[in-house]
Length: 313
Image: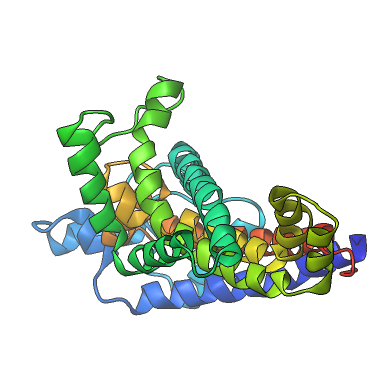
């Protein structure tokens, strides 16, 4: 196990380096001058040149890339070109709402999607299966921002149960922060609830046809015991995979939801930084999201051995 962990961590290094190189080249080739954007529309050529020199943008691209990679290896993410603050400080200030939002969304998706998919597999021609599959199709078809606006109109504007926008933060009010994230989490979870329900249904239907499940029924075990002990555990590998990928995708894909609900998270920071051509922040965020994908995939692989003892590392 230890050798496997070390091997996976070593293979992550070239992956992260490739991502860093790709992002750097992508930003370099994007039209627009960051010095001009930072100096303002009415800045003179001398003022723009002064900003370019101050930000070290006159150096060749390969030198700036090598310097940036060296800083990253030492744990220095640089400073924001726009605000002048350390990038690590900006990320630390914004990570709380994004992390809590992703955890709430994936928890809702698992709590609803797994039982729904399991019930649809257990009674494939019943009303629950039809409702589950119809919900899955709707969850896939309706964009997240449409779900978000619908939830805001019904539960925030009409009923007044939740705030329309904003996020006070845990340091101000834990209850207020959690309440503010309910509607964003529901809107984000709609797609992943549908995805988890479909994967659970497909995996469970395959397990239900196995002989040991029929034997468990013949021994008189209740529906819940058969479902939890035999069906769900043996169908867990694809479900765990989709949950892990979904959680990583939620962390990196909250831009639209955070914008609709005015939540100051990493998604908003990424969107603002891209518009401002704030290279260090954009590069650090993409590397952070890439590292999260690598770690989540590693955690998913390790979870396989827990659910299926036949898998050895």
